[in-house]
Amino acid sequence: MQPISLARHGIDRDHLTRGRDGDLSEIWVSGARAVFEHRGTLLVGGGGLFLTDRESVPEGQTEVYLGCDPQGARYIGVSLDDEGRSHLDARLDASRARDATDWLTAPGEGIDSSEPVWLPLRHLAESLDDVQVSLACEIVGLGNWHRAHRFSPRTGTPTAPVMGGWVRRDPETGSEHFPRTDPAVIVVIVNTDRDGVERVLLGNNAAWESDRYSLLAGFVEPGETLEHAVIREIWEEAHLEVTDPRYLGSQPWPFPCSLMLGFSAVAPTRDFAADEAEIASLRWFTRAELRAAIANGEVRAPSTISIAGQLLYSWLDNA
Image 1 (cartoon, helix red, strand yellow):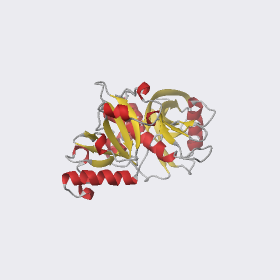
Image 2: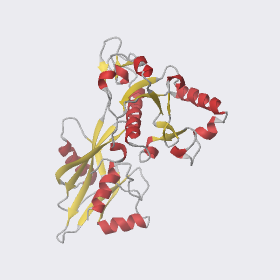
Image 3: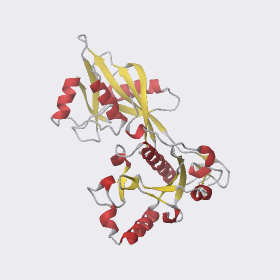
Image 4: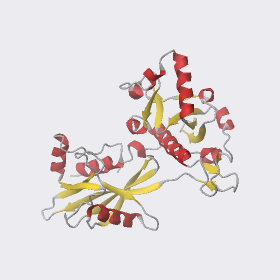
């Protein structure tokens, strides 16, 4: 599976330049550009991420050195709190003499807007180039982590960003706390009948609309391998025994902090029973059946911004 969408990478994270503390002054002086994030949304415009200099960054925000691109340009991600977002919006509004509510949230203009707009990462994944999708995934994931880990799990003391924003330190104990990544497996389950016809198993999550189907997935638990997680999750959700789990590729999924690990697995039979707690229904599809169901609107399949869509369409095209 070729890396596309959020799995693309174009940034050297340049860890040796992060420094020991949270002061990024030297990196700013080198001409670094700011990338803005607020609660999973990014400031974009003109066909890409909205980039600016330090003067536009509100005081007291969380700053993270994200790295440099192939030309050596450096980038600092700024994760804004609500006050910082309001301050930036007002500053941009004043510089253009427009109503901020109008153009900062204007629907329909999207990433190509001539003025900056806030958009979720999910809406941008296939529009950004390799460098910018790397920056976006970094700052959204790190922004989520900083918001959720402001206090030490040992003492409850407020922690402070250090190491260029990649670590939070407890000032009382000196303990260091690092960004969290939760591994999750997602699986293309295939059954081949006696005539050589392949079918893929898709599930409808209990929280989704009834026509939305995707691959089965679940988090890796402590003390298990990825392969065992595949077998366990499929049994828990579908009461289906699978064999031969094989790794296919991965994708960051910072919603809020997952790493999706794509696998294929073989189902010797098509006998299943949806758990009905997490999975409302399950269906087997041949390639022809799935193409027809998508075409006539019976089934909404995952888009290719996610590894679920990438894996599914790779199977569909591999006839």
